[in-house]
Length: 186
Image (cartoon, rainbow, N blue to C red; front, side):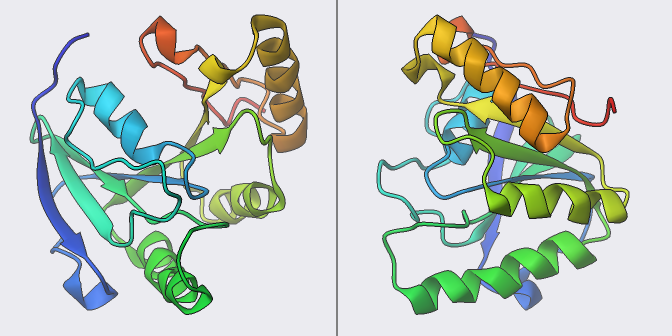
């Protein structure tokens, strides 16, 4: 796998801690334990750039990563189930919403969906919210390597139908971890 020049920039626990906008930003969003940090690591070819865990809810801050000093990947806390208190989970909501609604340097969103769980209500609400803001979005199906090939194809079709994204594609992690999909080809 090709290694890309990438580095950790900073973390923020509240909007006032966000760094000043400098480079275009791509937000990486999805449910807790969907594989956001793992996908960032796979995309840049650095297995330990973004911290990963098997425990849902370990990403508790907004984390910025500079990619070839050309743009930032921004790892957001997950939504949905997390092994943290309800109060902690609720504290993430304004952090995430503030970032997505107000960040001037936000150029697009990479929405991750666990192919084994399918498209959930949160994703169905999130897609039109982004569309209203004319925010470019890419949908990536993760964890397809955990399914048999015939099941993968079935779930891919279900995800296309549920999300309305006809151009969703998925490749298993064994195929270089390039689970990706362009959304917007309506």
